[in-house]
Every structure is written in structure tokens, then in C-alpha cells.
Amino acid sequence: MPNIRPVSDLRYNFAGEDKQVESEIYNKLLEAETEARLSDKRLSHEEVFPALRRRIKDRSGDV
Image (tube, rainbow, N blue to C red):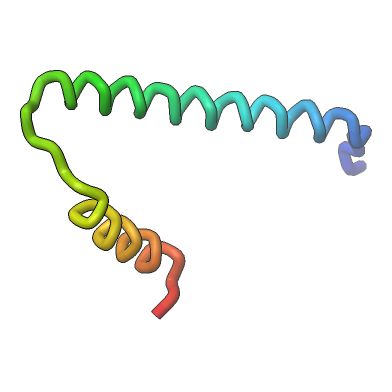
């Protein structure tokens, strides 16, 4: 017999996933801040974003 759950259970589950994603982003930002404090190297928007866009495009399967 299938396990049927109420819609409210699904909502709470998504809320938990959102919190997990927020936590991961926060941790990555802390890591980036620490790395920035330890290095004098700085990159401009023009140096970073073209490569970032290529990576996103490659991962999404767009050609």
C-alpha cells in the first residue's frame, strides 16, 4: 500500500531544504571571506563572470 502524506508534510519538507541551501550558501560565503583575507589577489567582474557563465551553460546542457 502506498504511503500517502498530507500536503502540509511536503511544505515543511521544502522549508527544510531551503534552510539547508541557505546554510550551504552562508558557509561558502564565509569560506570566500576567509580566503579573501588571506590573499591580496582581487578579480574584477569582467575576469570572473564570463568563465562563470560558461560553467553554468555547460552544466545546463545548453549548446
